[in-house]
Image (cartoon, rainbow, N blue to C red; front, side, top):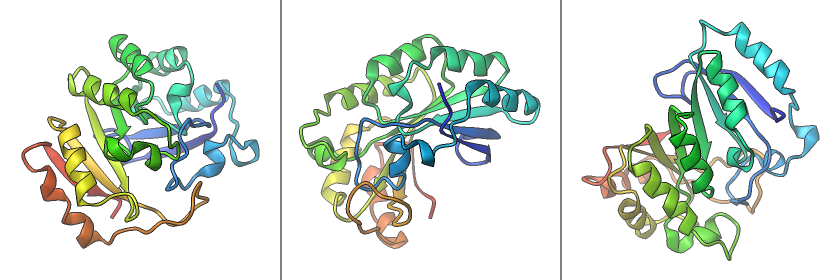
Length: 230
């Protein structure tokens, strides 16, 4: 697998760990609020295209300094990650996976094999608006629901998160999301970022106070609910 991007140090992406973040290219969703279209579409000129051996040479140079590796995208589960993750773990690093939840069988397999230390899953919207939100009108969100239920079984630490914009997310949608993820330990709202190269038309972010007004909708259903990146 070729590494499409590498953030050599992050204090935020992996809770409780000093980590680096690896980006893979390609995604099966076309979310209009995505601000990294070249990565989603796998445009080679926009990617780092770092060979695996160079990435692992970097990791070896950070042993004893970094504690974890975040694997993000795009959608990492488009790839067979077993060997890649095993090599990371063999060097002593914990592994966090970011996913859109559309590959529950692959996610469950990695969890069952003990290859993941943390999972962050995007819950794009209420199931009733999922196709619209991921840019695929005919998308069936049943597989996303399967991944949500899998994570709620608690075999691996996890969080859910939603990127929010006015056109797609209202109080109605958040009430449905609260029911969908009820029992989760952590949920984060991330505001739409108008910067970057977007897949869809320009959308509209909320302000901080408006986003904070949604948080009480999750009271009693989710352990920790916060804004992120505000």
